[in-house]
Amino acid sequence: MPQISARARRIPPSPIRKLVPLADRAKRAGKKIYHLNIGQPDIPTPKEFLEGYYHAPEILAYSPSPGYEEAREALVRYYRRFGIALDKSQIIVTVGGSEAVTFALLAVLDPGDEVIIPEPFYGPYNGYAEIAAGEIVPLTTRAADGFRLPAREEIEERITERTRAILITNPGNPTGVVYSRAELEELSRIVREHDLFLISDEVYREFIYDGLEHTSVLQLPDLEEQAILVDSISKRFSACGARIGAIASRNEEVMGAAMRLAQTRLSPPTAGQLGLTCYLNSPAYPRKTEEMIAEFRARRDLLYEELRKIPGVRCVKPQGAFYVMAELPLADAEEFAAWLLTDFERDGETVMVAPGGGFYKTPGLGRNEVRIAYVLRREDLKRALWLLEEALAEYATVWAERGEAASRA
Image (tube, rainbow, N blue to C red; front, top):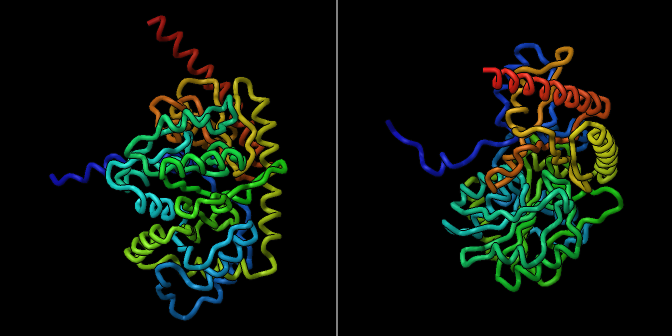
């Protein structure tokens, strides 16, 4: 029997989507599921974005491999608003942020090379690194420290002769941490001294709360050769299905490599670029995005306060993005997440969360954690958190009874 490749076998399932078959089965059985497992905003996509689709040409043709000139020019103006100076030759439009990260890793890693990533990190990074035949070296951050970056010495301990890059997510997914300018300047010194790339996933750039400010790697001085920005419009424009992202760098060799990779997949989505251009060129931006982020700030506050009321649950208040890593009073969060879909309900309703272990590289970490995405309306979010509290109480009873039965046997 023919065998698939070892690489394909090594790519782990998404921690965000691995329980989808159980959820589908629960829905077919009539359960309503509150989805806290995936970062899909429920806020309508701006009509100005959709108008770009309405004005699509008669033939939806291939776009140029780096993306339409108009789309890249719109992105140049977008980045300029945040103090990031680029020209359109330094931007390539990608098929979502996923392709941007993959392009960045393929551009800088040879087989067996290493990339250092603070964990917990966005679970699919494991797959992207495997596609690039690279190896993730985890840099563990901890809730007790607010998921801040560790000291320079601890970072440098991870650097070997095979290290080629450090990859960060800022603001963090799944932690909600926002790295300070001082932290990023320290990383800048490290990558310059060790001749490494610094790849920054800035998908949640505008999701910043509590008066904090976001610093991009492309705002830091003396990083022209090291800094690579990867990005996506999915969240801040509530347009996940448009599949539009970007990779940007002032390093000509990096962008040349990314261009060759872009040519192999022909072109990014034409319709999504039309929507992007239309929205960024409209008077609705940035007002509608700012209104959406204000709503997520309110959801963040509600989520944090409600989680603190649940016995045994602990978490760090997110500073950005729209996720929280919550520690639950149980031993196996993946088993609990599956049980929520197969065994638990209240009035025909249940909740879906993402098990925390899939957001770590280090074996055993995250076993009692879940990632929660606060992407639901506040009334639905409050209901989902009540269901979670009910489920934790019932789950504790179920396991206590099982333990008693086992001891009697």
